[in-house]
Image (tube, rainbow, N blue to C red; front, side):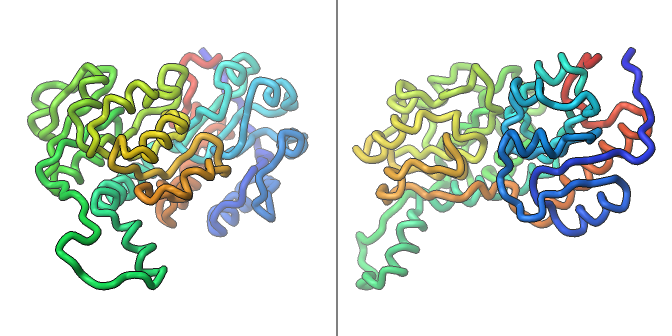
Length: 332
């Protein structure tokens, strides 16, 4: 069994600027080193920040790879990640070095689901295009065939990855009259499917081909990299839409850009990209895509709750106990 040891006043390095009340609380409880100007830290800067630290608080913008972990001082015993996703952390390398990893699950579920639903509503009704038209001053008034989009009631929404966020999106989508197909590794019990009003589709290709709107909610892994490949994008209906508020790397962006440009699919709503913060400039010239700057978790409430979870994980760990949001099972 893993032995946890008490740390009287843990030394904590934080890689990005957090909400003022969170930083104030952390400074009260811990010996903290903050990123005062909120710049994206280089690997060398992160290693320097960890000097003499017990705990690192990274975020999704930090690449905590095997090379960086190898350079981490022996004093570092915990990565208390700010956020639920941990694909930016090499978990195997952390485990091998005896560094425990925690995250902040659940706090952004409703925020991300709300934003996803906003994209599901916005893209088929061409609200982004309409907004740009009004801003340009080129609108000539209402016409019977002007700016036509698609109603979503009665359409089929295919949810790929039916975890907390996928389920929250389904709850919202049902209220708008969408039929829900879902795909996940393990099927839900029939009673839960009936209660939620969702239908399991075990064949991902069939789900893609049947759906009018596809929404991605799976984690980024070796198996899900470019899950929406050129072949799968080619299976989509010509009047279908792709929504991605999960991870940019789930989509083959070259194939998506080609499909959008050629009118092979009707549109897309994106909150995440392959090489953030860089965005493929070809997206900017495509009218039927809404581009958002990774806003899925961007609420005061969510960011405060995530910070509180980070603090709770650090406090429990430094008190000599296993933190509640440990990511690495079987850590030793």
